[in-house]
Each structure stands twice: as structure tokens, then as C-alpha cells.
Image (cartoon, rainbow, N blue to C red):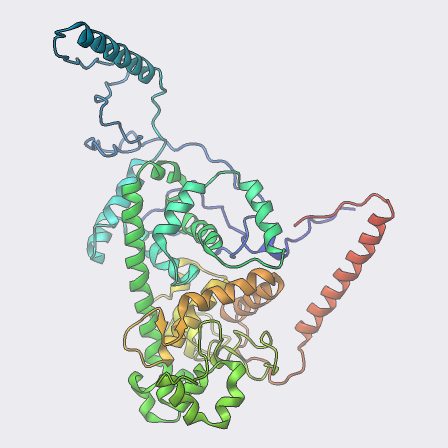
Length: 509
């Protein structure tokens, strides 16, 4: 009987990459369909090795640059220009002053000996060119200089800009692109299998935390997957720190513009999404803890009882930063992120990230990823008129946890009174906010998988966006519990068999 391979679960299922489009250069007017990465873990199998891409023979020649010629290692300052293939290397004459004494003669002989030894050693070094596509490198260098869409389209590099716009929607807004690119390129391809095993062990150790290591690891993997040409030219880019620095700065700028565009979509509809009753809240300056309606949405869910006992006093203490104010920090998740019909007092997992505000007929998540028209469309309608949505344009058909956190951060900004985006708002810090959620997802991958599947079904699966109307578990939830119980039972039986000395092989996923 043929048995199917076990489906990856836990950490092994969190970074499944569709690599079918790798090794192909993405044209400016076409985009390869792919599913976004799931965060936190490496792929279950190493990526296939790709043959080195050779420069196109029809590519126009580019002038050599002393800093870094195209597709070649950075030359040494003291080395002459390399001769054409097949011709002997010319020797640079070295003029030394005429010795005037035995001491100076000895010094000159020593210098000549060292120079000859250095030249001989340098001539024996292999002179290889790093495989790359000059057109890809030229497009990288071009897109970072162009600020107008018309210019990018004319130069055929608009596809790179659109890919860069995708990144914050997949990895979030709290990203240090310079750190990710530099550290990611430095560690890329070095002992991947050993690192994967170590990270898998660390993730199940119980004390793992979403820190710089995980940020670089996951974010760099997404950049490699979604920025056309980047992965194939990682080796070349390691020799071009100047270009890497410029790319990081450009990505940061583009990410800020993408975030601004998404904020505009959400901010304009926040009044309708939140179903405010006070017309004064149409002005953003009146929101936040200046008003009890928005204050309750921003209140940490564990403090809702205190808020409801004295809404105006609670808001006044937080807004005026009183010494005895309640703490509203990044790790204190606000009520607007919860479906209060599922929330259980004293428990922080039930209902988290399933709020009606985040996912509803007029929800903010669909405003960002599937467009304003789809937010108003009936749940059974899959096609709507108007400008193509981000999801349709970039062929995204899956929700990842970092996307959910990204949208939650934007919704929080729409609810507060700040006029311009900032990473902090009072005691609330966005970096701590993202880190706290990602750490929990690292330690409970089953919860992470359930959340992403829940969102994917409702955003892209065409199912109703209505959440559970009672505290009773649905058939789906009961089935999941049943499956997990059976898996635990099978694992216990298998463990007993193994302990008794019988042959048993564990499937590692």
C-alpha cells in the first residue's frame, strides 16, 4: 500500500517557499505567481542548486569602474587593469631610488624580493568572474535612482519597485533593511542544514524570542524570494557593499511609501469600519485616549474591566501620562484586536487577532490586500470592478502572520490621535508590539498555523467573514481538537513501542 509523505507541521510548515519561479528573470510587464512565505522556519528541504547565469552576449558593454566592475570582484587598488583574455599580463614598472650605501642597497634588495614575491603570488591567484546577469545589476542600479513611475516604466524597472512595495506587507513595517541585507548576505548559504536543526531545537526549547537573529533570517528569506534577481546575485552583491547599502536605503524609502498608501486606505474608512457613534471622531485628532470610544478600542484587553468602571478617568490618566496611569505598552494587546465573543477573561489567546474590526465586510485587512471595492462586495463575489488590488497584482493568495501584525499596527495608528506615522505612541512601542506577538507565535506554532489558515480562508477563500456568533466551538474547531487528540494518542503509543525496543522510525517534519 502506498502511503503519502506526512504533511509538514509545526515549524517545518512555517516557511514553505514556492520556488517554481526561481532561476528566471522576471520581465517588467509580467509577474510570476507565487505564494508568500510562512515565517519563522527554514524550508523543509534545501533549495535546488541553480547553474550560474552567464552574462548575455547581446548586452551592451559597460565602462569599467574602479570601485566594482559589473559582475566581477572588486579590483585591488594597486593592481593594473586586467588584459583581454589570451594576452599576457603586463608588469607595472617600479622605480626605486639609487642606493647610496650598503644599508640602503640591502633595503632595496629586500624590497625587490618582497615585490617579486607579491607579484608572483598575485599572478597565481585564480582570476574568476562572479556569474551574474549584467541586465539585472543594471536594473538594480537604475531603479534606486528613479523617483517617478513614468521613468521606471520607461527604463523597464517598475517590476522591481512593485516588488519592493510588497515587502512591508509581507514582513511588516518594523524592519531594519540595512541590517537584514548585510547580515543576511554574510550568513547566506553557510551551514544552512546545521542552522536549521539548531533553530528548530531552539524554537521548541521554550525560551526562544523573536530577536535580531530571527528577524534577519525570516526577512532576508522573503526578500530573496520576492525581489527578482536578488537571490541569484547574492554572491555578487556580497562583493558590492556600496550597492547593498543603496538598495537597503531604497527599500526603506519604498516601504515607507507603501505604508503611507495603506494608511490612507484605512484611515479614510476607519470611522465606518469602527462604527463610531460620535461624529467628532471623523477627525483623527479627536481619537485615541482623547475619546472614550477610541480609548476603549485601544485599551489593553486585560484592563477592560477597569476601563468600563471609569472610562473618562482611565482615558484622562493615559492621555495626560499621570503617575498612576494604567500601562498601555507594546506588549499589552488592545481590545480592538480581539473578537470579544470568543474572548475569555483571564485568557489572552481566545479571540486574539480575530476581531470584527480586523476582518469584517468592511474590514481593514481586505482594504489593504484586496482593495476597497472587495470590502463592500458580497462574500460570494470574487471579482469586483475598479483598480486591481494588491493581491491580484502581486499574485498573493495566502496570509502570513507578519501581514496580520502589519495591518493591526496600521489600524492602531488609524485609531490614535497622531497626525503622522511614528513607531511609538506614548508608552506604546511598535517594535515591542511586533516582537511580543512573534515570540508567542514562535513558541506556539499550532496557534500560528490556525490563525493564518483562518485568515486565508476568509480573505482569499470566498467564505463568509462573519465570525462565530456564540461561544460554542464550530464543527471545524471540534474536528481540529479531535485530530490533535488522535495525534497525541498515536504519539504516546509509538513512544511506548519505541521504549520497549521495537523498531520504530519517527517522521521528522
